Image (cartoon, rainbow, N blue to C red; front, side, top):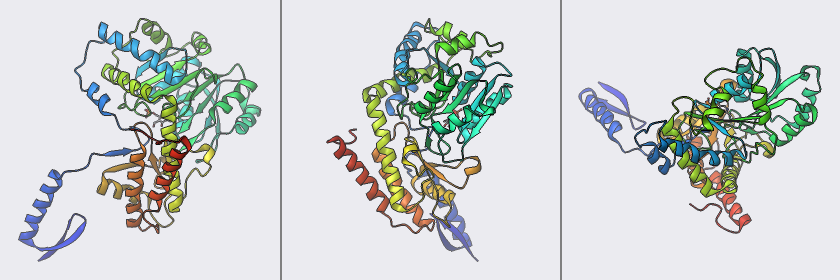
Length: 430
Ligand SMILES: Cc1ncc(COP(=O)(O)O)c(C=O)c1O
């Protein structure tokens, strides 16, 4: 009796007794084979540098100890540096969504009107959260793949629907589509048209990837998360509240308990956290912020820009459509790509995972199966971009896409070399 089994992807015809041995041997090999480490090319969680992992492996210390107070004292100025603010940065033991909920619950009363400018899954989350808090949500939505423009903000805030809003919510980088919004220009419109409205911004995948100036741009509440540009595992969320936001907080009747601004302000002034914080992650944060400071803000932004340009150049050269064709709004953290007509984006992803142990992200919600997303956020370097493009080219061919392997890698190499030439030195020193 001949049966077919698959050995390393190839069908093999064997007689029954041999088949049993082969299956056993295959399973043994599959569990013991050396595998390359997983390469995470998704827009979070992002890879964690070795120095941070080493810190995370240390045994816990008391969260009210002097040693931990010192860590909290150390991280505060570094956090202010990355948010470009003079304000205190609240550290929550939560994911980014927790900080988004805290942002709304602390500054808005039920029934107050709030404008949400949505351009994808995460910017829409502002509205989803606000509805559960009985906020009067005024939603302005642009199609997936497009940015929120100053013109759209002006049109909405001068329309009947945009009247009487106490707050306006933006996202800086929309991770689900790969759009970077022109945030400063958006804030300028709000300040001109509705100066009394608070500006709430999701910087979850823009912070540590591109310039964000909390104070200079007049942002009132900014939120972010650890598993993105901070190069940490998930578990910490950050929130900065302006003086205006703190003043408004005092007038809110149900600001909530766990994310309560006043509690954090009070305890952090004494280098404490109101509850038991994810202290191991905060120690890791201290090390991650040191690494970021060594690279410098300009260095971090430049590296993300080079990663983005290399990725987009490769995809364009290969002839796959970019989901965000407009360079002005292309994300520095993630590049969304449409599959070649007649081929399957999910197939690319599974081939990439199975053969190379590289993970890229798929589409979310309405975009599931329609796009795939290459993350280049956090501890991702030009070396990683060259690798993922090269491996993807193999998978594109295997999935039936009519591309010429090597063309994408060559374009990425040229983009890298152009960056070297522009700066008159190596574009990236590691
Ligand atoms: C821009 C943006 N905002 C908010 C979130 C939600 O963060 P979390 O999953 O940490 O709750 C994400 C998650 O990917 C995101 O990318």
